Length: 187
Image 1 (cartoon, helix red, strand yellow):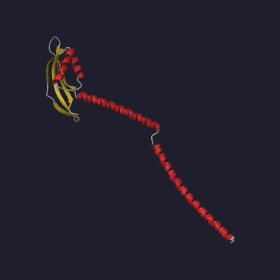
Image 2 (cartoon, helix red, strand yellow):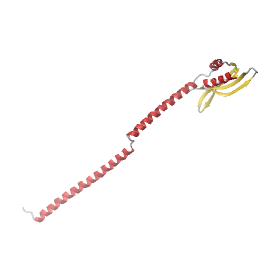
Image 3 (cartoon, rainbow, N blue to C red):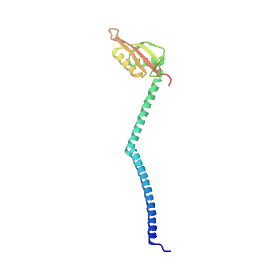
Image 4 (spheres, one colour):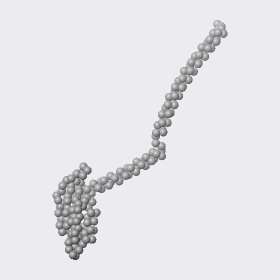
């Protein structure tokens, strides 16, 4: 069977059309795949731009370590303060300490009184509070140094009032001190 020239041309044109259609479909799929991959690359690039760089990560880690160190320091100070506030403010121990400080400064405590403990709240924290009143005699310089040490030695005491007066010609003075002692109640 001999095929004519027209059939050969038609057959060649058909094969060409089939090949062209196949290449067109392959090209379209390749274009879609390329667009999808370009979109993924763009998304990854955006995420990489938003990621901190190695140097800023190091800076953040350093800042975190610094803040953790500061937190540990503040926690330690808080624990120390809490321990001081838990110290007893019973009248016997406070009075003993006052007499010891008075002897160190060469003054004499001639009267001591204290109120019973009361409970008060400061900023939502409960404290036991006792008011101590005392009269102390001695020369003016010794009284001032005694008052100063009392103020510095008793971290939970708050001076309410200090009154100093010269009582005789020899220079003996009398100081009346009122101190409020705070002690933490509970946790």
